View 1 (spheres, rainbow, N blue to C red):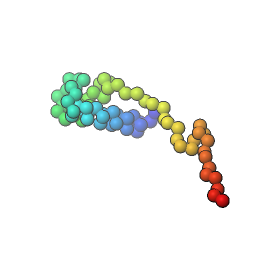
View 2 (cartoon, rainbow, N blue to C red):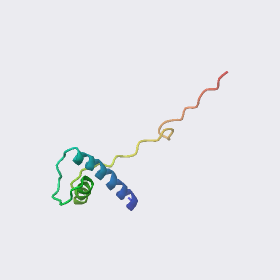
View 3 (cartoon, rainbow, N blue to C red):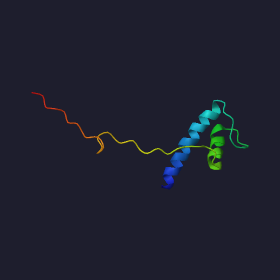
View 4 (cartoon, rainbow, N blue to C red):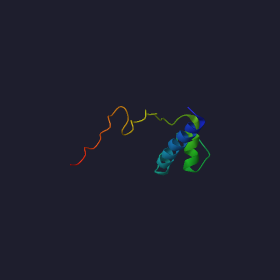
Length: 74
């Protein structure tokens, strides 16, 4: 895993959590931060935000699914 991927993942997870906090969810860690984005980042850094890395879905037309060619019109 590259550093850019982990930063991207951190931003995605923290953004989703920040929306939950704005909607009224209680912080999972003690923090002096007031803004939901900062609270979410503090939670991520503390390791209390559960997330799962899913395998990529096969792209359309990949080797797993044979490509279908249209039949020529007569």
